[in-house]
Image (cartoon, rainbow, N blue to C red):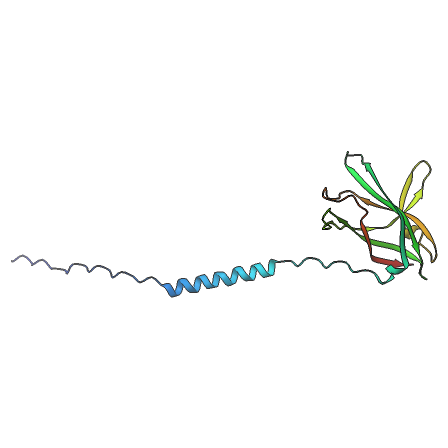
Length: 171
């Protein structure tokens, strides 16, 4: 018996260099850009609209304004703006909301909180505040009030702020 001849196998051919799938990479990058753009647009929140003046604002006059500074129990500074509000309209007012605009030395707005007008009430040895609902402001009536500010920007020019009536409720 003769020995079987070894079977010769051809040498494996080197694998051809694969082409870079530029088309697939481009489509993937474009898809990523679209996803990022959609997330950015959906996630963006528009700023809240600025409060607009209340139509009854022309019937409310603020006078005899006075700024005070005091320390609270935690040692922080609290600012008060006190004055007199007069209702020259024909409706009884049970609530007033003001936007108070503080500016810096360049006239730029540095703070503009929206706060309720609280009437001053003499409670014996001290003055307290109460919502106007407790004692509404009738037509032709005037009342002392106080606005309280826990925080005002350090950049504030220390001038009286602008007051804009942005909300009024009636009885």
